[in-house]
Image (cartoon, rainbow, N blue to C red; front, side, top):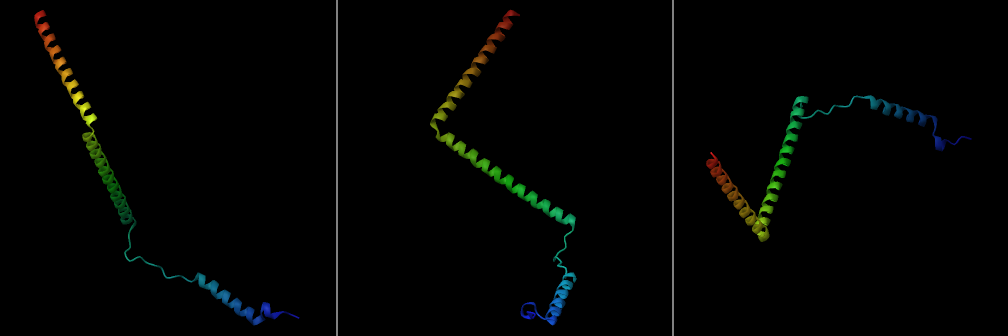
Length: 118
């Protein structure tokens, strides 16, 4: 006693085999190639990619410059608002002026002495 209900008869196996053969042959059929609308040569693609990289770098550079400018402006404003820092700057300027005057006076004195010595 064969259980045909599970396995299927001879004709079922033949049809299954034919379907499997068709599916196998279908895999080997050439598929229609998908062509791009505009064909780009290797050199054109390279040039385009290079241009994209340049544009990206330029944008990054501009952004960094803008950021640095904003930080410098913020520092300048903070310094202008900081009275202690302003006083320190005035003291520093006064010290530099006095040092320059002292050096100038010393140079004049030494020149006078050199003239006296002959």
